[in-house]
Image 1 (cartoon, one colour):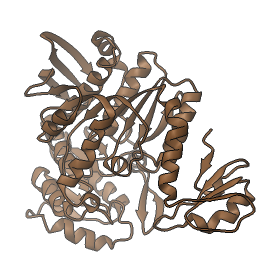
Image 2 (cartoon, rainbow, N blue to C red):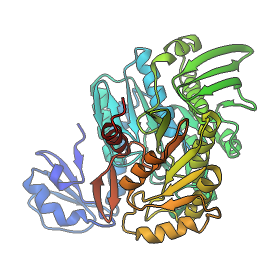
Image 3 (cartoon, helix red, strand yellow):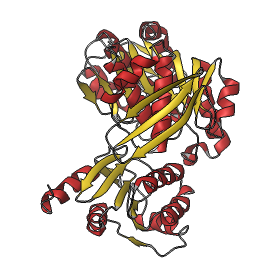
Image 4 (cartoon, rainbow, N blue to C red):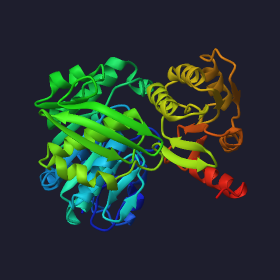
Length: 455
């Protein structure tokens, strides 16, 4: 049990309340409420009068980080940590590694974009990598439940803000680096710099050698093994993809291996091979990993496939220029008919990628419906203007209402077509203003199937 708390509503008797001054809320305004709920001590950044002891520190955020690391890092590091960073593929790769470990009869937990999972428990979380207090709370819960392995996504924000302080990774991994989060990092150089911080806290790295930024991770890591199509310790020799599965042949140390996965697309070959390599470097036999591969699947909202009569609809989280391009190209390779794409861009996020994504969708799809994707506090029409600034073809229409856009896209499907519904993936909401409004791409597809009496 973590004895610190930063949310006065969650304080229980015996807790120490740490008053954090955030962007929108100042914890110092809720000290009295924390005391009413049972706080026995207050950590603050200014002198206050209270009915319990008060310790004034220069930076309560830094105090909390140091206190948690000092008191709990030795305990949580009794577990084995596997971490992955990169722009795209983190969720799928980590979820594949999590499933493989479960199939190998290991006690394992996953922490990342789609939640905190172990045994039969699944909790949703706000960030890819939670704040340090939440993260350690999850880790202590996992430790007390007998978990031996933690598989987690490590975001650039988490590394920049040191949310993973005190955690030692037995194996780290790098998927790729493409344009994203430049509203925060400002430049690709700064984005890369944050990612490279991960190399300092991992014993060994599995690196996608086909990515142009791989050389930086190879140079900065203590020990490395690589995966790739063009080269790599785990070297892809051949692969065959259809809409339901992928057959893969790869070489490791002069021995050739073959495996069939329940995954589609070339980028999922990277994801699977990275997961395999991370587990292999933990000491699991390659043949054992291959044997249980038949029982693992992509996570919800990652190339999630729905049959619509004699065509398909795919829900995927792709929301960066690179990931949108890769998804469209992947399904172009396995689709006999047209590629129809529904895509938008989030509000209050990097506006530079909007025209790029708009152009990619138009150039590589047969037809595009541009729609909303979490406009947040921005005007959806302004976001759409940014997207359309990069579009040079006339093979599109705009339907800002995402629900209506999905219905229209499904109506347009003809035999052997594929409709790609991109951007939301597992998310079951739209953020409009500061409010989350329920909307699930999967539910909209299922409702359509019921309405049209598809069997």
